[in-house]
Image 1 (cartoon, rainbow, N blue to C red):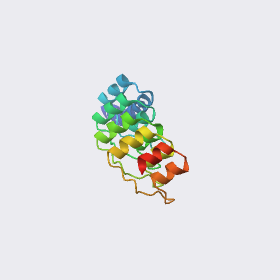
Image 2 (cartoon, rainbow, N blue to C red; image 1 turned 180 degrees about the horizontal axis):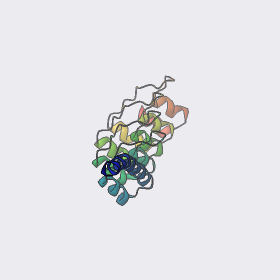
Image 3 (cartoon, helix red, strand yellow; image 1 turned 90 degrees about the vertical axis):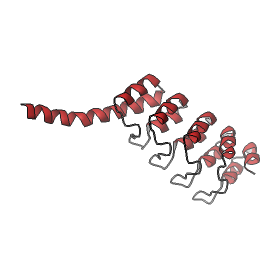
Image 4 (cartoon, one colour; image 1 turned 120 degrees about the horizontal axis):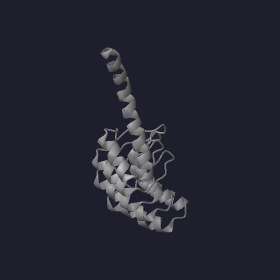
Length: 172
């Protein structure tokens, strides 16, 4: 009887940990700090991913949840973890236009020049979407303006294509 109960427990433990990670991703999506901390106390994998490869950190950043991102980073979240397309939390902050979150990620070691699967960088996302406050942050941290994506375009060329005059001025 003990052998059977032990086997059942051993089968349930990994499922419970997986559920904790799923719940951590859900808490990150809503920015629920208390729930994030609770799931981390129960050993949820801070770098687990959902079916699209999104980590809790990427999801929290995309939602603009700066405090949640900070908690996840303090818990050991990989600041440079890439999703299925090669995008990072910093790229998400650039795309969505969150300069304070970009600063947080950079302060925790985000690779400012990391490229995604298409060769895009955080600076390119900020340039394409007119996120000029994020461009300022990235440029102030010496983002490489000369990197080209798979189409051979730089951040300046992307800003030019979008008619982002302020971005063009920041990138020249």
